[in-house]
Image 1 (tube, one colour):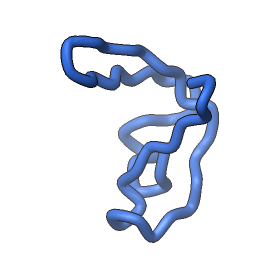
Image 2: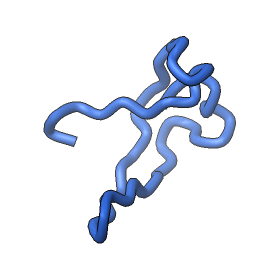
Image 3: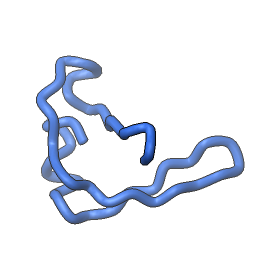
Length: 48
């Protein structure tokens, strides 16, 4: 998660990403410093 979302999504919390008719739940494992979209971003590995 981007640092701008750190309060809303602390490490250990979960979030759900919806793509089309599929949804996947992920656990936040850390925060990144980013200038993309003011730090309100989510970055995933190719493995999820």
